[in-house]
Length: 184
Image 1 (cartoon, rainbow, N blue to C red):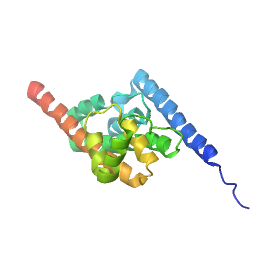
Image 2 (image 1 turned 90 degrees about the horizontal axis):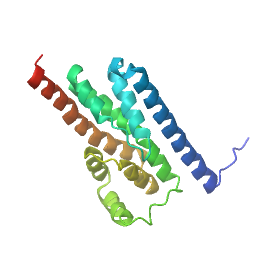
Image 3 (image 1 turned 180 degrees about the horizontal axis):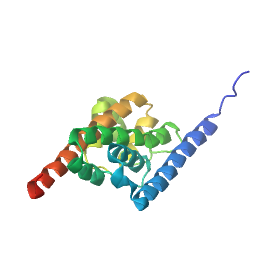
Image 4 (image 1 turned 30 degrees about the vertical axis):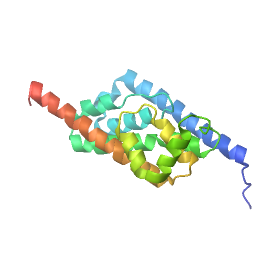
């Protein structure tokens, strides 16, 4: 039996609906985890979950960096950075999905053309740089990457590298500050 083909509007609606559903789930899950106090006991799994959920929220940034700093104090900072980078990168897929649906239009925005040229020219390096710097509007980068049909693996790789290197600084920063002031 032949599967029916979706129209472009149906395809866009499906992707936008998925991005909204993931965002809503992420916001509720973060709220529940915070209220229950479970985040403190989850260790590396907690760092991954918070990183994923905080970055899956489109246009509503939730700071996962604070947990990365705190986790670096009690856990292995390198492993914290790996787990935080992975969770945060996978969470950013919501912006990518929204952009690849084609229904979010950024072309009218002032910097769209310039950003599109930079992304086409520098690709993973452009994404890595923007993922590294503290950037609450990184969802726009995901939307742009999806709209430009950048391969999802390239987008995730660049995002992971940037977020991983930032997480290394945060986790080792937390570890170093704690040891400096309170010692082990």
